[in-house]
Image 1 (tube, helix red, strand yellow):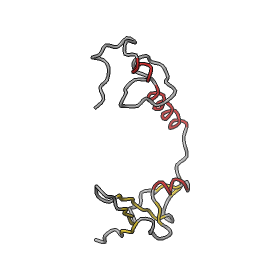
Image 2: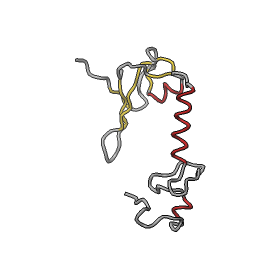
Image 3: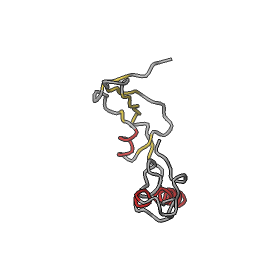
Image 4: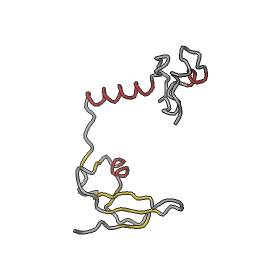
Length: 120
């Protein structure tokens, strides 16, 4: 079994790209195995690793279908809807708050202290 080549940060050869780099090119890995990896040293924890894929084997990104577009819109609407006041906050509600900022700042908006989500 051959091992995966490891390169230093910014030293990978041409023709290899990360998932983000492939996406910027309008491509996706398309089921291919990892061709190599790059490692960047960190001071406190282990190395930061990024997997590389071959650009010549990458496939075009699948087009957005109406069903996928509707599902994505519904998911984003759910992230913006405050569970306390049921209004669209206009931004994605942070999980650490659990409610929109006005409801968080004024807990007397119909919620008791027991119902207010706690930050973990």
